[in-house]
Length: 389
Image 1 (cartoon, rainbow, N blue to C red):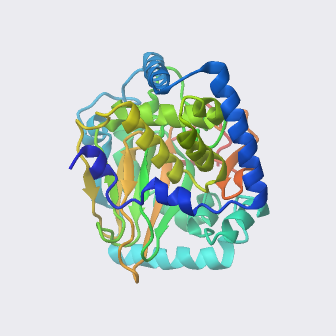
Image 2 (image 1 turned 90 degrees about the vertical axis):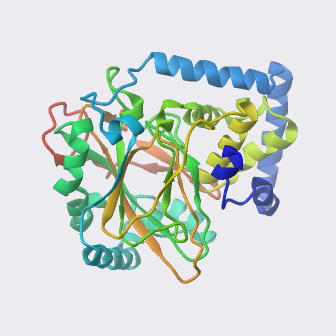
Image 3 (image 1 turned 120 degrees about the vertical axis):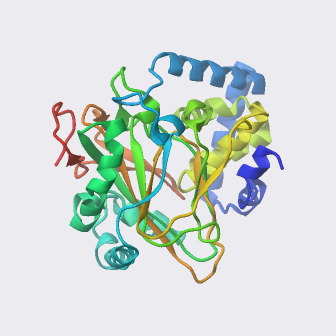
């Protein structure tokens, strides 16, 4: 089995997704206009896959030259610093984890669904396709819910982060990851400064700090998770290869321009992904499969580690390490995890941004950041760059 085949285990082929994508009349008209614009770009630039390959290589090289490939505060030989992840460790008991799972699910039903950080247009768009769940209603809720914050500021977590992040730590985003019976996996992806669907990165590290460790993710299992129930998968040390994020951001910033490098079918698929698909993981799959076309040996020198965990355990990783999860293969099972995104006060969060964008079935939608705050979970804030509580 090739490394590409190993990465794609359990994921539906993109061809099937595109065949079943149901655009309404207005979306079809919009797509026709976008395809016409893409064709105009193609005529103007006369670009091809080799040109795109060169663009990715040059962009990645320039990015690496501008940053120090090192951890935040210390160069050490820990697993986290060297491989970009820390193996699962216990934070709370299994019983405590399951109690929190039940409590958070109840909060989704009774509170989060009405008191979320999006606007009604985003919720309605997701709900119209049956996609509204705690993954979305629970975003940023550590700002309001002490139960979430208390778990994420536990010293057993921040002690593990301190050798890399230092003594001063903030959380800039909290979120849940649930999987219900027979649901699909989360596709491979990497991100450092979390540009995602925005025109600008959400995180701005100073020049002496590496993007690869601009933030660390702590993923706490609130239920047992294994290969059959959607456990995490990670490619250690893959933070050193940044092509996936480079290409993702190039497309996000100007999808029609990048579509001009592709043939008509692939350009159509790119437009379907980046204009008419909810969430980022279909986009991620498109980008990774395109990378294998551009670079046939992409990632083949690496290995995949499956992170099976017990409820109450946590894993830490650089989000620039390629990571994914299996789908839920049991129809009557449920998986829930809570994640905190940690950085230091020296990193600017949402600098000069009043709004952000979220991918919905109706395209990227804007929402305000008025209530978004960073949370000080350890040490002090000597810089006062961010709105922190």
